[in-house]
Image (cartoon, rainbow, N blue to C red; front, side):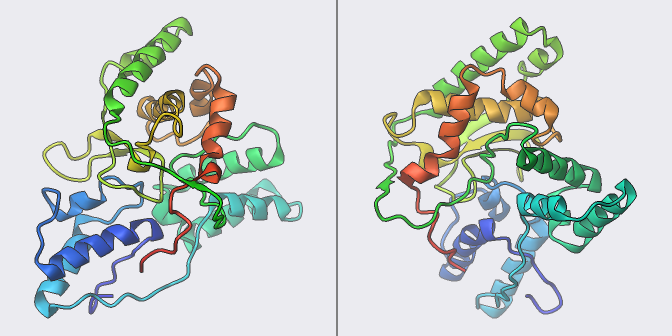
Length: 297
């Protein structure tokens, strides 16, 4: 809270806000070209430039950390889908009215750009929970398992390069789309996003396809893979990383679709899809990524 300005701070952005505030108070240079770029590795919702400028202006004028007011507001599409399934029978109009209220009265408006996008995502969760379709792992929002001291820690392999794996994924993806007669989607893989490990390990995502948040190329897409996965192949196999990259490439050729039916149709073209999706889903149950720790704010 900054006098008459309120800056929303989502849980997945807390560590980066701490990094920014600590650097500003300590007079340390940032490891990026501009303060907003610190948030470039994170999934949406991300802070706006106005949010970042407001926080920095407060620190410069007061030489103090902005007051943080904790609000325990949560939003989870899957839990909302469970509530929807548990409702008594109602007309389609009444069901849409309930969904409209959920969209306008919760954090859903900060997560989804439109009511249409929200209802599509909610419907996908309803289909998955009802058992009518097979669910797809969401690497943009991996769930942290309960604290388990027996988990082996994920190790860092700094020499592991994501670029060769991405090139292999692109080649395999083009071949799949060619074979399937998906010429329009195949053409979209002629214009590839940049791909890198995230600047540092993050707790909120395995990988993300997002627009650049700053710089001359602002708005152009990038793929960022969590640096936590820059681990030995014995812990994170190359095949698993290629499948993860294919997941993000499906977002690249289907921007704005989320995990809808068309996204799922392309995703399952990947060889051994079911096994790899299950392996990705269970990865945080096999290794300690440190995500079970409480947020710093």
